Image: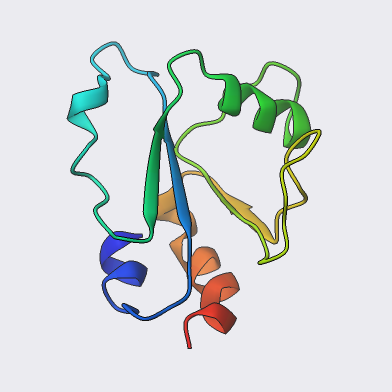
Amino acid sequence: MQSQILQRYLDANLRVYVVWLPVMPLDARFDVADLLVDRRATHYWDNEQQVSHALGDAYGSPSQLVWDAFFVFGPDASWKDGPPRPLATGSPVVEYMPTLKSVLTPYLQ
């Protein structure tokens, strides 16, 4: 995401919300701080995996843990009673990078 989109399109009007959660035994909040650095990115730490479970409930199966995934929402999307319908999703992110780039193309101008 950072090298293929954010660094290439410095003026793109994007907002990136990164939700980190402990999944693997050695996951720690301080370990992820430098993995995605961009002024348009806001990082959150979801120690209780609440966002992950909300996304799993909305788009997968109840109680499914969602991680290493992206969700692209349009400019008017709003999270009210639950997450809005995404324009695109993919997991793991690295395998779905072409999809991510494709759906973001209109916003990269």
